[in-house]
Every structure is written in C-alpha cells, then in structure tokens.
Amino acid sequence: MSVKKTNQQRVVYKSQFISPKESQLPEEDAEPPPTSPTLKTHEPSGNTEDSEPPGLSTLNVESIPIVSETSNPISLLHLHPQLRLLRQRVSSGIPASLRSRLFCKTHFPEVSLVQWNDWKWQLKNRITDLRYLERLVNLSSDEREALDHTGGALPMAFTPYYASLLDRDDPLQPLRRTVIPVVGEKILSFGESIDPLGEDSHSPVCGLVHRYPDRVLFLVTGFCSVNCRYCTRSRVVGDRGNYHFGKDQWDTAIEYIEQHSMVRDVLISGGDPLTLTNDRLEYLLSRLRRIPHVEIIRIGTKVPVVLPQRVTLGLTKMLKRYHPLWMSIHFTHPDELSAELNEACGRLADAGIPLGSQTVLLKGINDDVQTMRLLMQGLMKIRVKPYYLFQCDPISGSSHFRTPVSKGIEIIRGLRGHTSGYAVPHYVIDAPGGGGKIPICPEYVVGKEGDYIILQNYEGNLYRYPDNLGRIDE
Ligand code: SF4
Image 1: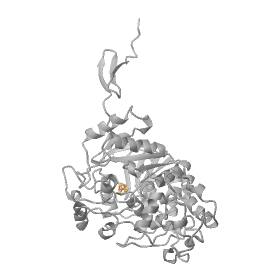
Image 2: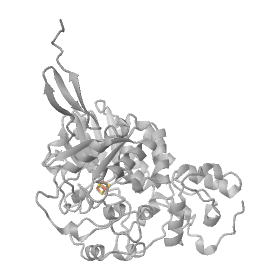
Image 3: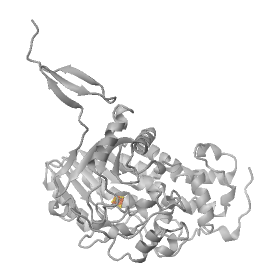
C-alpha cells in the first residue's frame, strides 16, 4: 500500500499550535468558542488524549484506506509506518466511515481526515447560519424563510458530522427536520410554554431540579453540539437568559446534594455534559463520587449520536473511574445508526457503562411502528437498551412535531410481542407543570370473569388467567 507525497495545500494541521490547558477548571461556562458563520479550519487541541500523533500532518488523506461501514478499521492499518501512526490516532478517536470521508472530501476539501475526526474541530465548525448551510443542502422556501427571520428562536446548530447524515435535497427527511428550522416553529399553539415541565419552579438552586425524592437532575452546561428543534430545554440551550453555568454554579449544586442525604441518584444533563472537556467532566464526577449517599451517577447525552468523535479512549478511561455510572443517550431515527455511532457505543459499553436510550416521538419523523422497530432493534445491536419513548413535550412552537397520544400507544402495541421485550421502551408523558414521568400503556387486561381476568395478547387473542389466590378447589 503506497502513501502519496504530501500535497502542501492539503496540510492544515500545524504542529506548533498550542491549545489552552484543559486542566484548568472552568471559571465560566465550559462551551467551546462560539462558531463563526464561515467555514474555519481550526487545529486540534494540544490535549494529549485528543491531539494528533506527530508526523500525521504529512499524511495524504487520500492514501488512508477507506473504512467502510462493515470493515474493521484497525485491521487495515498494519503495513506502513505512517499508517501505524494513524493507528494511534484511530485507537483514540473514532474512525471515519466511507460516508463521512466522501462528505468531508466533497464539502470540506481543505480539511484533513484527522481534523474531521477531531471532536473539537467538529464543535468549532458547527453549521449555524444560512450561508454556511446552503453550501451543504438545497433549502426549501420554508427552511429559508425560517432562517431569514430567526429572532428569539432556538439558534440553529449542528455538527458537520451530523450534516453528513442529512439528505441534500429532501426537506422532509427525518433527520433534516430535527435540526433545520421551519416556519412552523414560530406558531404558538394551545398548551405550549417555554418550560412545560416546570423545571425552573422545582429548582432549589440554579441548574438543579429536585422533583423526585431520591434523585436530582443536575444541569451543568447550556451548550449542545446539535440544537434539536423540539428541545424541551431550548430556554436553556438557545438563549441562556438567567442561566449561568460554570464552576460556581456547579459547586453550589453539589453542596445542595451533599446536604440532602436522600439524594442517591444524580442525572448530569444540560445542554450536553459530554461537550465538556475531560477535566471539567472529571471534576464534576469526582466531586459527586465523594458524596457517600450518591449511589448512582447518570449522564444524559446526545453526543455519541451527533458527535461520536468525542468518545475517545481517553474519555472512556476517565469515565470508568466513576462507576456505577450509567448513560442515557438521545436517539431519534434509524438513519442515525452509523458506523461511527456503533464504535462510540461499543467503547462506552466496553467501559462497563450501561447504556439506555431516550427517544422523543415526533410527527413525520419516527411516528410509525416500522421506523420505531428498526430504531429499537438497531439500538440493541449496538448494546443500547431502549429505555424511554417520550411523548413530545408541549414546548413553544412544537405543534408540527407533536402526535396524538394514541399514536404512541399504537407504536408500543406494534412493538410488544412483535419483537424482543428488551427492544420495547417505556412510553411516558412528562406531566406538564412538573408531575414527573407517567407511563402510558396499551390495555392488555380487557375484563374479568368470576375468578379470572381476561387478557389480550399481541395478536389480539383472548386468554383467561386464574386470579383468585384465596380460593381453594374442593
Ligand atoms: S441534545 Fe437534548 S438538550 Fe441538546 S438540544 Fe437536543 S434535546 Fe435539547
């Protein structure tokens, strides 16, 4: 296998670049620098776990073996010394699939594969405005109008990686609808509000929601790598308003947890906590792990789906130190089930982290049995247990995303019995105003006949079950 000589124009990595030290604890919010509207070619950080091995800047990306959706990338990298260097990189970052490589080459020709695979490059080059976006997709008039008048709405933002999953021409493609705004977002409908779950009214200190007796929701950042158009926390993610995240806020929230011994389970969320650097995340985890009554720590994230490059071996090595640690990952559609996601979830699972899914039921996106079955079965294949299917919260401007509750019941009925029980999530409504999650189930107990209850199975057949333990047959 030959390695071509460097094409000077393609070399964008500068080894003398020195990034800010990540070991510093945050004095302010921990998000990366804001994106600019034009394409940038920032260098990777100097952090040892995320930086490129020396010498790779002279490696022509076109000489790197294509990693297909099915091939084992590690097995391809054993012949050439430069490829051995790349193996160091691949073993830390997530290898790019053929789809990613083609997308990168087409739309970011000046960007090296090493940069593409760097999670910080992905964050710094998020797609955030109309001019940048229209280089990547053919916009509909609806999308264009929404982007022309964005005042007050959740800003658009998504990673170049996630852009590679979008359909260039179809504005109705499910994933595209979840990240590109449309005019429907500006319509306020019955029952909608900016904080439908009443989280702010259940926050004893900033960024901490204490709704259930033994667990708390700990919001640690307002930053997400992708701004979902239906986000329940768009008041936090899009426009921070009164929210300020950072070390002072974290410390106050942690002190609250220390003082409340009934809290045995902490869900770290945001925004997306996995957009924090390892050091900042470790600060949070280590402080929480030192609290004797905190038994379980959970992380809520969409990063493995929208920024799989973030799941470096350095991250998983750090996370392993804080078990029992669980992770809830936000999935939307089977189109998200890429080779990169597979690798990211495999690393997290190998680190001993139980993975569960959270999916919002969305009209025209995943509101049919076949789509949901494909997604849930796909999740099981990447070692993620389907956990929650959420009825879409009545966030302001969400009516074009919401389905009737009967649709969710129909989907659960179409899954239960028709596929593995493990692949059937709990369908829940998060009660408006802060009532918590309420499970919604199809009716399988359909009557009672004397000492028997009448049950209906997944095929609609009826069965009698003896249900009188007090009765003894003579
Ligand atoms: S990842 Fe979660 S918190 Fe972030 S924008 Fe999407 S729904 Fe909101």
